[in-house]
Length: 342
Image (cartoon, rainbow, N blue to C red; front, top):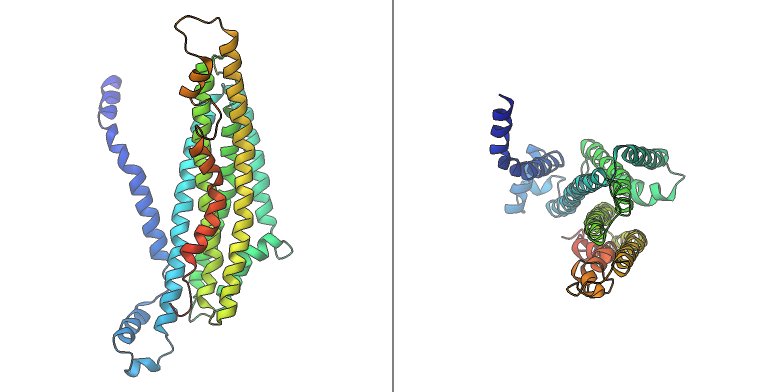
């Protein structure tokens, strides 16, 4: 009976393809629904005032233009939340698989223990953040306090609690997933699981895995910069003074630029040394092995297997390393039109 059950399960395994899309849809629907700040009564008042601005409804305190500008900025922020959470889940799975495949059980236990320790340090750090830390004041509390000061008529207490929960989840992910990505990058330099002597093909496979780690790490860091920019710019939609509004946007750009540069340098400092070491290991093995008449040129072999380090051959990877830096001005361009006048 067991073989038949296994065969039946494998026969319908193709249906698993729908799971990622369903998870993303459920996540987006939940964020969109719970992120609403408009009651049924306000909704009818809003639509009536938009269509009949001169009616008696205009005497009500609800300002359609300011309300809709805040809605716009809030859902842009929620868009970056969806991107950040999905990118984090992708990086968690892809990097976790690389770590699992790269180590025998005893070494895997050590790597997992180190990951738990580093993640615990990161989580303890963000838990300890308060008003005495610039990171807390300049990123989380600045936006949160501004939203709170806007008043219950514009930002309800339920929405404030919701925003705190969402940002906390994103922050926890931002501490845990990069640790896994960093360990996955280190794992590409590990010796084979079987304990056999590595050959050039093995190091080429490891280079491919290193590129996968770079793609995943770049995705989570770019999404992190975009989320930070949207979070910092959300209160700008509630600021009526033009100079103060522009100054707030400028401060958001400066903060995201700082972290964009930091994340880019982290990618460069991780990927380039690992790529150079993998290429040199493969090159050394090629040069040590006896040349066969039909064997390709070592340099050509390295190029064909992605181990030749040049700007032309690694242009996509250089783009991925620069992506967090470029995400800061990109977020400014995407989110700059959040003016109180719409």
